[in-house]
Every structure is written in C-alpha cells, then in structure tokens.
Length: 295
Ligand code: NDP
Image (cartoon, rainbow, N blue to C red; front, side, top):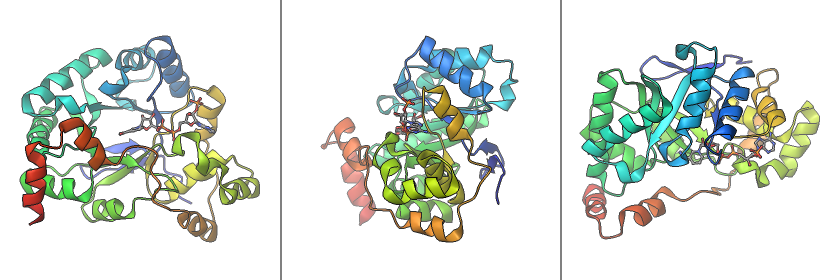
C-alpha cells in the first residue's frame, strides 16, 4: 500500500498528495478559519488563485500558523487577463503581496489562451520567476495536449504540473497519457465533482459500505491509486477531516478497476477550448496559430 504523503515532481520538489482547495471560500474570516483549521488537521498544501479573491485571507492563515513556511506548499494561479510577459510579472507580484509571502511554491497558468504565442510569452515570465527562485515549481492548468505540445516546442522548462478537472466521471485519459509521457504530474481539480453525482453513484456508495468509508473517501482513494494529486475543497470541519483520512486503506485491484470504468467524459466545468474562446475572443490571432500548428 502506498502511504507516502508526498509526490516527487519533475524538478525534484516534493508536493503533498492531498491539499485543500479554496475556490468559493470567502476572503477574510472564512478563508482564515478554513485554512487554519485544515493546517491544524495536517494539511500542508493550499490551492488558491488570484481569481478566487481570497489570497489575503489564505496568506494570513498561513502566516499566523506556527508551522514553518517551508513546510507549507502554497499554490496560486495567474488569471487569464494577466497573460503575457509583463502582465504576468505584475500579477505574480500582486499575488505575492496579497499572500504576504516571500515566495510561492507553485504558480500555475490558470487557463490556456487560444493564442498559443501568448501562452509562450507568459511562460517565459514563469521561467524567469522560477530561475529567480520566486517560485519553486511552475505549471499549468486546464491545458490539453495541443497547448502543451506548443509550449514544449517553444520554451525550455517543462511544466511540472497540469491541474485539470478530474474525477471518476471525467478521467481525462488523453491528457493524462500525454502528461505521463512528458513527466508532467496531474493534479485533479473538483476531485469530488463538487460534491455532486459521483458521490451518489451506486458503485461508489456500495464500496463506501464495503470499506467502511464515506463516498468521498472512496473517490479520493481512487485518485491516490491513480497517482494523482488532489485538492478537495470544504469549509466544513468534519469534511476537511474526512477527506484527509485516505491513507489507512486501499481499494482492491478489482474495485479500483471497477471505478476506472465509471468514466463518461462528463465535465462539470468549462471545456478549456470554450473557455478560451469566451475569454480571448473568437477573432484572436490564436485560432490562426492553432490552425497553423495543426497543419
Ligand atoms: P470539489 O470536488 O473539491 O468539491 C467541493 C464541494 O464538495 C463543496 O461543495 C464541499 O462542500 C463538498 N464536499 C467536500 N468534501 C465533501 C465530503 N467529504 N462529502 C460531501 N461533500 C463534500 O470541488 P471544487 O470545484 O471546489 O474543486 C476543488 C479545488 O480545485 C477548488 O477549491 C480549487 O482550489 C481547485 N479548482 C481549480 C480549477 C482550475 O481551473 N484550475 C477549477 C475549479 C477548482 P462544503 O464546502 O460545503 O463542505
């Protein structure tokens, strides 16, 4: 049974295999209390983003904790309107200042642009921040193989992580295969499908009874056995506890395979292509660059 709580990334940095996601956690008291509670329960990875608007509260909880800074792994993300070399630099410094920290552990490009050259420009700023040791790990989020392919061909540092929507109903085989081949770790967002249908799935419910665990623990254990990093969100103390207790049991090979069969490519969040269109406009030069790339 793999009970290791960390995962080694392609640059040798160890990341906790489970962390707390804080999307929709309100800035101020709610984020301070939620992050403080999770840290007290043993969580050492916190996943925020400039878009979530709660970097201040998250940073305050981290700074107020008695835990040494180097024992906490802090992720934040660059929002779409900040893509580009100069804007990315500015956005990074803003996030750092809101968090009140000296460095960030993991900085992610939140969504791909459909302008592949814009992604490359942004990534160059990320590479500089990495070299200047302002960030320990750089990565991307919601990238499909086409985005990664272009990035890998035009830049030097391979992203260490791709954070994507992933749960048993959306197993993302194509992107996972690409990432495994290029030594890019996968981090699952909405690992519990936002507390939705997958937790009511009859197989998940029956396995919860069989292993004397909750449906959420069965799903999170499935992520672990797939070598994925997870960041379930909760503001409920009992759930924050529950989600962390997934290292004391193992799904049998047979049950693990049955869960693998639940995949139906069902997203709850936007498709990165649709998101890029909405954000960057259908007439942007990226479509042209994607077309060129496909030729
Ligand atoms: P999750 O799959 O983590 O589900 C969160 C929801 O499930 C909340 O409503 C929570 O309720 C509920 N929940 C949590 N634990 C349990 C449990 N044990 N049993 C039943 N229900 C539970 O969804 P998220 O979308 O929040 O994803 C996790 C994190 O991923 C985000 O917070 C964010 O950090 C990141 N993310 C990244 C994205 C990206 O584009 N890179 C996009 C979306 C998310 P409650 O809080 O009320 O307890």
